[in-house]
Amino acid sequence: MKTRFVAFSVFVLLLFTSVNTSFAQDVTLGPRLSGNFNIYNQTGLVGSYNGIGIGIGGTVDISFSKHIGIMTNLTFFDMRSFSSSNTAQNQTTESSLSLSYLTLDPMFKLEFSGFYIVAGPSLGVKLGSSGTTTVTAAGATPNVTTLNLDTQSVIFDIVAGTGYSFTLTPNSMFMGVDFTVYIPISNTYNFPGTPNSVLTLKLGCSLKFQL
Image (tube, rainbow, N blue to C red; front, side, top):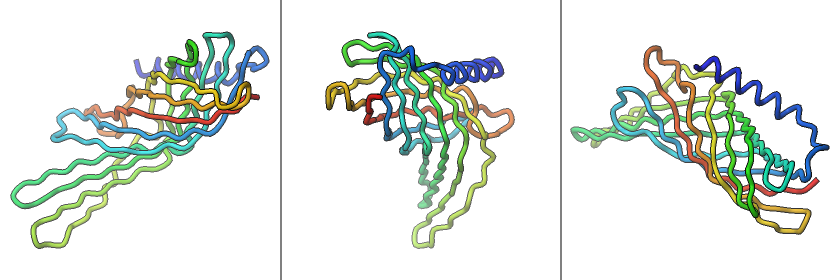
């Protein structure tokens, strides 16, 4: 299943890359900022792990007709952070984990009067990861331990969402706002025999200029 999805993702990425924009009615591109809410899931996990992050990148929006097109988001720095806190017997233990990726999201787009729906695969290449555990007891100095967890170098998600494109300057400049959900396909950490993943919800805003 995973091998098939990887092959499909590579095929779709190559297909989108090879698209000749001369067949497009409209092409817009520009910078994009996003904020995300991350929920970490793991088999047998005690407590809840969630947190927020940011994304910095760009978007390319290609329309082939009035209703059909493709949209590709490239996020140069996609931070997905989460943490958990537990207090027992006057002692608080907080685990904080942070991941950053270079992500590419080639998505098919259906548009109706400015509103659009997108869906497609997402490929993430790890840029870095870090983690700490902080144990704080009453009247004592916090004890901080660094976590060195083995993470996947490449992750795959299914991304789907909706958005709206505002016209700022006719036939020139537009602003897009969107909400997307990243459903994980691959594990996040290399924990043999223990499935784990991060579900990510994103709010994005882009400023697009027509070519």
